[in-house]
Picture 1: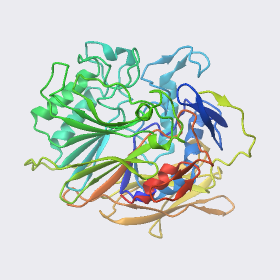
Picture 2: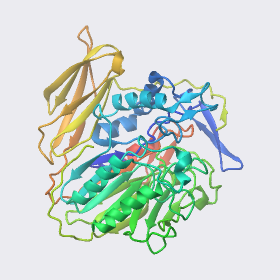
Picture 3: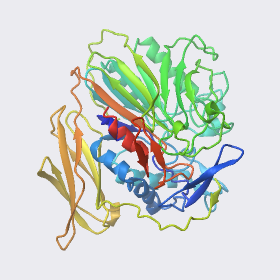
Length: 520
């Protein structure tokens, strides 16, 4: 579905693995009170990740899906992470005491370090994974904050004093980036929502905490909103995920109950899971006047709010698509995994005179197995994907799935560009950094793994298009997605969806077929 959109690029906002959740051979799903059916996973994944190899295995499980591989080969991605790449609602310094998932007391920081290594190995990112931004032509700049690595403990999020979400250095980076950007639209790729409450008392995981007063992390958000207002920064939008339902949220000083009203209204667009359990809609925090303009979750369809419905109830699975026209209009769509548009909003920018230049900156109950033959994790010889695309560079990540020491070669438009040796120390992965490229240009690439006896294994052919330059008045489109293989719902070869074109798509992570077909 996503592949059908042929987007210029994709934002992966986290929870792209569920390291803290097993995927049993079969799992019952309910409407909150009664069993609705049984979801079958084939292949399955019967462990919670603790070791480095187990974190790696989670990425291999998802990357083994044919539809996901096809999408990734053709679509550059920008990767963020959230909690489930490590463990649910984790924060630095946390110690998991008597958790049913782990033996004994476990340091979240130790899990974090192993997860981070696997994340870097299995995604097209450089050795340092941090907050950053990227410019796409005259009208678009996207900011990628990290709401997970620098936060203060979740239990402190109801305190009357400041509780960090980004921390002072990252807040300064974001404020400076928003102020200096000459892009028409400044989009914050917020992998945790600004206005929707996540978690519960003692473990509020995002900014909100169900109290009208401005508390904890909301003091950091207040600082950011005040800065945007005081510096006359227009056209700031948040794209978010994490909450497992679909929504459009608006923050407005006209409704704010926290005693602070000197801020500009802000729209936040929320996607549901692309292939995981669905919940909600969640409760709202009214400190900054957040309210739903649109909402779709289990409760909307008459189920229990926290029903954890399987992807079989596909009306609640979704991703986002956004496009900016040559003249600067922003069109946001919330799309079901069948390709149908659930909600859309066309926004005309507020034009300001800003001559400053900007550039890219880096800163469940289970049932017994059905007894069917377990399918292989992957059928590809060489896995490939690209990401972090700019107007002159790209990162290309690959893995030799034969799991033998190999020479890995990168070919770009038919010419050999680079090579390196890979081995078990990086789980046979490598990310090539390619620069000196032309802007707004489509390239094809392929990766080859050559073992000691000379046998060569080839990847499928991949492609990407470099970003436009900062002054180019061109259309740009992209998708954003999150929450894959959560709540025990993994790769089901029998899962079937009839898409918006009346075609039946079967097996695996159907959403990637839909996104690819939409050609954004």
